[in-house]
Length: 115
Length: 111
Image 1 (tube, chains in turn red, cyan):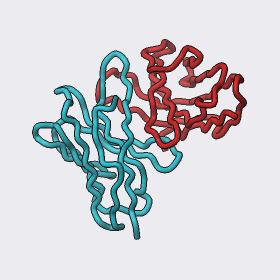
Image 2: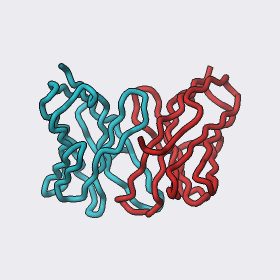
Image 3: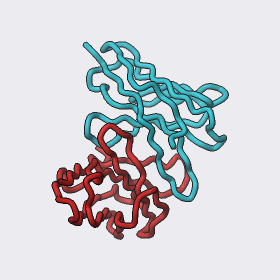
């Protein structure tokens, strides 16, 4: 167990709707990263938050947004859902030491299906 | 793009050692090699990481070549529960410390 939890486990939405996914990091971990994993692909980096500020973003449109809270929880929000947003969404927490040995620990993921 | 190249799939008999190779010929001097695995539809699980020395923990051993252009993850006694996709990642530790995943190696352990 990594101590990283995500909710909900599964979610079904329709195209055009909005969704909020939640993550609870390990206590003391100041950094949370979000990844999208389409079927049969490796996870793709969406963005990262460090101490409640966005600290880098991958190649995802602005309708993907996030929040990080002081209590080690965070959210991923996706507006105007598209069919291609169907994927496993993963969050990963780390201490935020900003060096190569700062291991990221993943949650179990949220499976989002957009119909 | 991922900075690593891995075989698409491998098989291993239960109880035997599984040796998973990874090429990372463009690795920089201060970049670490990380290994994660992902059992079907679960979150990736951290296995091990290293810079240039061989590393061992309770899960696996990591052998990095002297020129650091390739590495091998060794599961000494594979079990059926080791069936998973294994990702070799070169850690890009800049302002944004993101992991860049490739497509990984699908390891199938058979009885």
